[in-house]
Length: 217
Image (cartoon, rainbow, N blue to C red; front, top):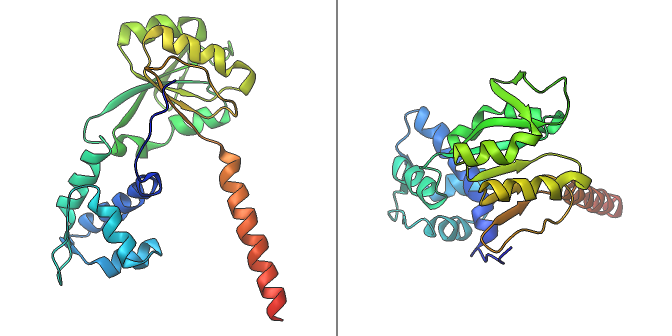
């Protein structure tokens, strides 16, 4: 796998939150948003807000703010979410089923079109409207459907085999929820999600907060 460097990664991770807020404002009929309002919502400084949004190519009007629709379009374009991407998911267990049921993905340009599993009780059924196929057909169907994105929700011990089958079928981007590093060709991009990472951050923040409160008593 090539080491793909992404500039301003923290900013990119915040863009979906901006997009959610802006989309809610648009639904409410709000056409202009001021930097201070976004700063309060994001719990960030106004300078950070301006720098974040500047990577989309949109600049606010001094004393007025940003045009909501223009900013929505710019964020979607920057994230390539204005072009729908089809994906397949492997591992229709608890996590996989939850992802299949999340309706918000299509708002972010992601459409999961099929799932794969090894469980005979799940193969041939549908989960949240997506057909579940035998994992032995993964390479074949990925190639036939010309899908370029795969989502891995299997135990770590099986993740590499799944990744190999995905790559053989033509997958170029893998969203990996298995707690293991994958070995893939240089032309394939992998985004690894470690769910425990968020829990670790929360635990440290809570511990420090409680420690500070105890010191103040």
